[in-house]
Image 1 (cartoon, rainbow, N blue to C red):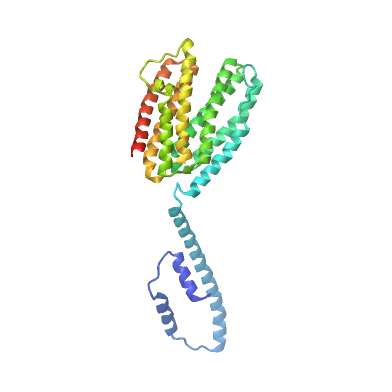
Image 2 (cartoon, one colour; image 1 turned 135 degrees about the horizontal axis):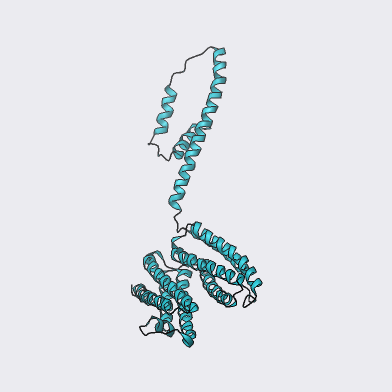
Length: 332
């Protein structure tokens, strides 16, 4: 191999820049080294030994250089592949797509109601492993910054789905028809949010300042015109006992739908880097509102007025923050 090539490769592997003229100085120094004449037999013996030694040394040096180059490559890759790179986002989407496809192949069938205990147990046993695998994948994956808040909510919602499926399984085995119906309704409700968010992640792309702000403006206007959202965020007392339960359920369902719409909108059209900090605050406050409507829905299902009131207070605080966040983005 040409000496110059070896010279360059050693410096590349060591990630060191040679000084100007270093190779020429080395070549001249080697050329000036005196070579003593040797008797022919001795020269023959030393040439073979020298060749063997040179071969071994060359292999050793090249192996070391290759190892150094590999480490250097990994260091460079770490520097140029941040958590929110296109590569990381694509990998995350691929993981979500694979699990979402599995989630769509299983579920609770419409026959799983009332005293259809065997059908309910079969559905739960098929769905639970898929939900658990999805949770494991979410936990092991290094989430890109773009999806940090959405990913945290995915884990919470999927964990609730696992709890609901376990409740369905327990009610089915106990032949508790009322418990089965309650658990099935909860599973269906939770599935809707998961479908919406997973679809949004798969469609996600970075917007411009103009398109992102326009998306936030549209969702803010929809939130302002949502009468049930305003009633739930207002200060008037809301009783949910007896025949008022259905009215409270409508309030919560409509508010939840609006919060979900806002959550998915800022995922589908992600904020540009100049608005990333403001977007992160908005997403976190929307997540708090989302947690609050889930708390209220579960309290209504259990006939827990105190639990509903606690969730509503959290919702009021979260929506006040969401309004501030949106105004900051729109007026900035």
